[in-house]
Amino acid sequence: MSNKIEVGCEEGMNDPSWIGNVEPFAQKVLARLDIDGWELSVLLCGDEFIRKLNAQYRDIDSATDVLSFEQGDEYIDDDDNTWLNAGDIVISLPALARNVEDFSVGKNDELKRLIVHGILHLDGMDHADNSPEQEMLQFQERLLSAFAGERVCED
Image (cartoon, rainbow, N blue to C red; front, side, top):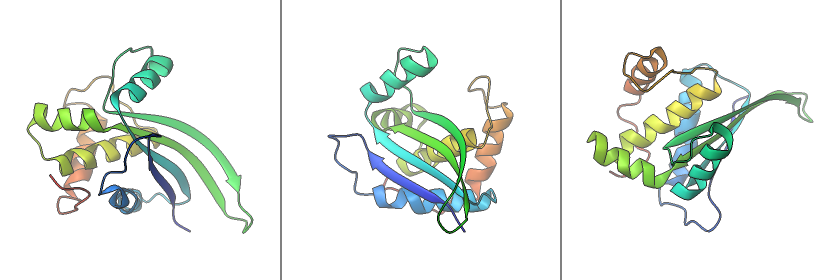
């Protein structure tokens, strides 16, 4: 089988030139995690869009960089394959740009980090805060090291 990944942008937003690279990278991450039969979406958006989601679902009235919404519903397709609707990942492009500045990292590395972070949340991992000693964040960084040479976007 494999995985189904849909990538898009918030309505009214122009697709970044690199949008076509998100799906293949996410596929590689899922393969590395030995995940098969997932269906998920990645939505790139602006701060106001993600702020509204953050306020509605987390009671935090501010923009954030990435949100994950687990679904967890299974279904069987016409070919008798079982799929897991894993959920949705939402990434704010303005927050991505701020992270690049705030953490002195390249845009490519930060985009990969946000995609991996979202996938790990969909896979049931979580963290209490953003401190580096959090187990999920340590695993995330080890996983990212396996993709050091991957290019998703320009810096």
